[in-house]
Image (cartoon, rainbow, N blue to C red; front, side, top):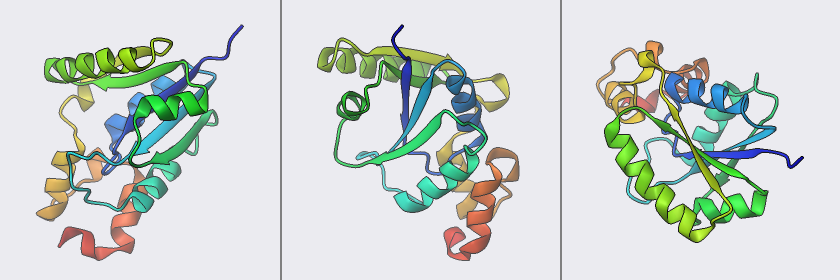
Length: 164
């Protein structure tokens, strides 16, 4: 039997409890789950990739079959090939996400028809939680505690300049 290996990609800027929920659920579906921390060329990052990696790795410590990998300037499909990935995993919060992810899956399939895309629906309590809203809250000094894992809060405390 072939090992099932997933790749869940995102910018995780910052990682949220919604991400953690999806990653936890995804890890149960695969023998190995890679979490691909990518720079999104369409966005300006709030946290440097090294900081995002550190926050993500700390938040995922309990998931023993999960490994965080970082990539810049490369397609997820190419990273998937390199890692022997069998499934690309994505989370959906709304129909807007579905439209975007369906288009992405179309092109990913065109680039590598051996990769299967898998979509997980966000749990209702996380449907409105997004990294962009968390960044906005950070900018205005609001409490982000209900929306992010402890690793993000620790990072924020250790570097007060993030709210400026």
